[in-house]
Amino acid sequence: MLTAKDRNKVFENPLAFFKGDGLSEEERRELRSMLGFLVVHIGENFRPGNCRSIPALTGLANRVCRATSRLGSFRELVPKRYLRNHYFLTMPEVGGDRIIIVDPTGVPEDFSKPYDSPITPYFGLREYAPDSHRKVYSAMEDMDDWGTRDLPPGFHP
Image (cartoon, rainbow, N blue to C red; front, side, top):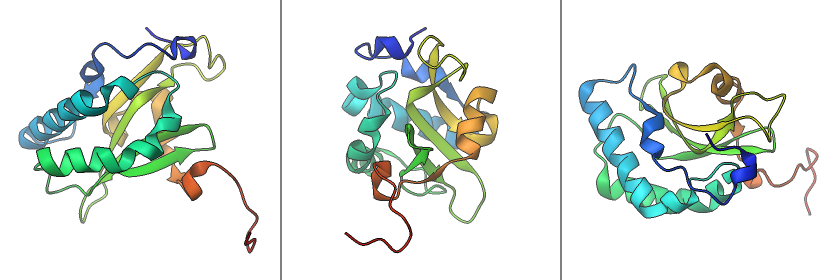
């Protein structure tokens, strides 16, 4: 397992972290295919602790998805954040409540030891994520200025 100390190492097989629970067979196949194309095109960014790259990769990831995916029941990838230290992508369901999480840079399994704990990516429906990931995904927020700064309400530079 990789930890935050392994920032320069790429997850060898990111698709091993794909979980198709709750998806139809067709959705599972399409999502796995789309993730495979993402690995080919931006997989070098699938590293532990590399979530700061997510905002910049969102446009490219959506172009790859539009060209390769037939997941018509889900919208384009939308960047989200947890607090100010983790960024990931989501695919909300059209007209529904399901959300696919595309988190190629991973979440620590033990938040009390963020630099020593194994970090694992996650690809699948939010409600089927591992417990350590569910804490992050249940508190996700919009990126708001790519999550780089907090401005007080009404402040205009």
